[in-house]
Length: 300
Image (cartoon, rainbow, N blue to C red; front, side, top):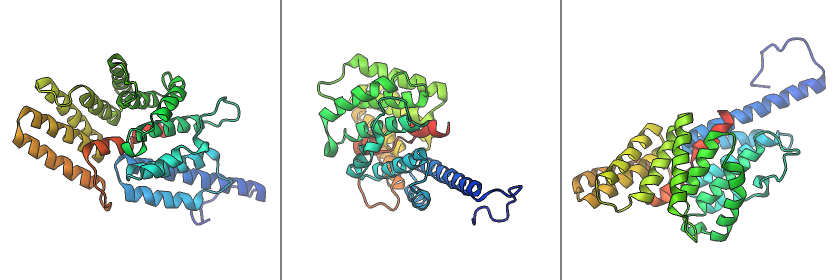
């Protein structure tokens, strides 16, 4: 094929072996495009994500390895969620192909983990007013918790604790539960040096415990979230954190600082959605953004 023309492969092989080798190369190429798509999503480069989705569409066939096909579908859901098409993303993540397997028999490596990630995306999306479903939220929490709480992958556990800490439920979570989730998420991020995971945790902590609070501790919390979000390089979470910092300055009566942070946060939101004709407030961004560190286990 065009990708491998002129590259010597050693001694001639049978036709059936050549066909298997070509199928393997195609699957490997598709897997690489999926990983590059997730990397682009982590930097809010949605046009690039779309390009990799188109490349994947040309490669994925019925004979493609099931895990690679599942990653391709998950990337499409990530793209829809990240660009604000929440109903479309929820439709993908609710697909039977992302149902959690009840046993490990016949389940290939990574498939259960991808299903867990899709469940976490569903939980986050269903927090948005347009997709709110408290019954399904409680049901899904019950399904995910046994798998996520002690999962071998630390980044997946971190993602679970971040989502769980951010959830608004009826009846509401106890304060101690929220604190435990936040502490576990922060500990996990430190172990794996997950900068974006820590930024998300700090944003959730500030939102949970320091919203409309006057005092130096509230400002310290908002500044810490802003600094960590800047380190992450994720434009959406930078916008979220700086928007929170602006609100904290407003509560303190520091109007000049608040204005500067609002301006910065607005620019970051616009930069994150270059080429997209949509408007978000900062709570919408926090709800709909892709937490792309969820897929670290795929290439960690």
